[in-house]
Length: 297
Picture 1 (cartoon, rainbow, N blue to C red):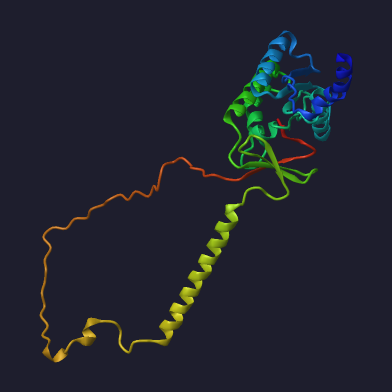
Picture 2 (cartoon, rainbow, N blue to C red; picture 1 turned 180 degrees about the vertical axis):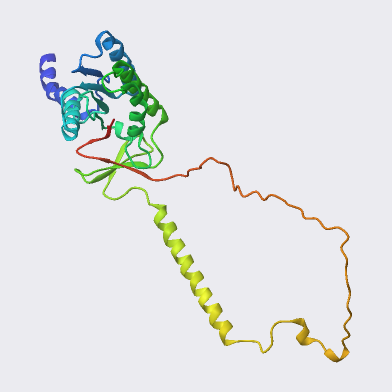
């Protein structure tokens, strides 16, 4: 009887995983270094451990490729994207830094994938990728005597720094392959849309300004038209309304004993010397799921 009952329940047990929701533990973020130059030497392990620390903190994959081959800018960009996808998978989150040590006119490149789009931004208003290059460049001069371990360590610092900074307000990016806009929802999930997600207030401000100027121009035209049509016979002076027959004139002289002039400085400074910025809508770009940007040294 028990065997027969078990036999009848077997199909239900096989369907149970399909009927009940379950979660799969995500793989831990990884760090990878490929040193084509051999310049890391004994510092290789220390640099790898530092990158792994950044990967674990951000829960994003972090990789560094140190190249010495004479590659073109386009080749470097393609190599960075391909290397990332082969190491971590196309649908993962992370970034890869290609450090170019070929010598003449080096071209460094950072590619981002997944959630890394939102933290390591490449928009014109908020280009964190470019700022990361600026932080690493001091370690890469002069050419031929670069402090390669120092640059790798600084890259790890930048990864953690901009992760701690969080996602910029109203940030989105557009992927020209999918033709979709990507934003981060309040629930922490990525949202997509066919249209620009945030309205650009600058357009509204420009239209309002134009209508205001047109209104002022019309007011000026109406004022001069009315003034030219209705003119007074005499000029606006009190003497035009005084009976001159009953007026006597006297001469009176005032002698100034002392005269002085006071000079008072006027404060033309309308505020402090610091620039204040407001909220803006910042848009990045992506192609085929990869963002990022390049930089010549």
